[in-house]
Length: 223
Image (cartoon, rainbow, N blue to C red; front, side, top):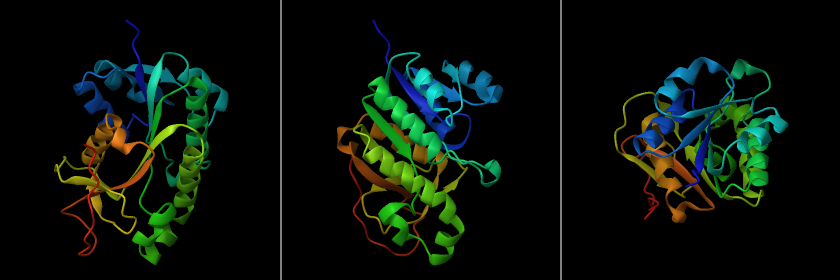
């Protein structure tokens, strides 16, 4: 029987690593894109297949995406401020284009509250601080929306590296802001993977106990 993989970019740390752990717990076949081999032993020990490459290399991403059959691609990549050329847009653009060429069925992009119509959720100070990053993430979102791929865009709020609370929720309301723990984002992304209701949706991800302000909003149901 042919195995169809989930292609995961950004698995070496943060939300991407948490997604990798959950997918393997669910016994999903995963291939992880790595730019540096440092995280390879940990991921290989989970049973994850590794493909080396840099998301800023368009031709390399085409080869990586076609090295094995891929049903869904997930990207959590983003550059640190000192990285120079940030992969938030260009790296994700190359991944999206490669996924379209490879005939991938669904692309899940982990972005950020503050992009697109959700900029109204952030304070002017936060917007000013994050502006350079958010512009790049917004361009990546727009590229995905217009790519022809079935997509889900997940926009987490402020991220914390703490254990899951189980209180992570999704909403289409662009005015919602708050904090969320990285493992909770991973749980929501993995739920979107299996839900047709999440197809072609842009969803904010926050912890219902860590909202900014007393805002009432409608939670998005994936079932």
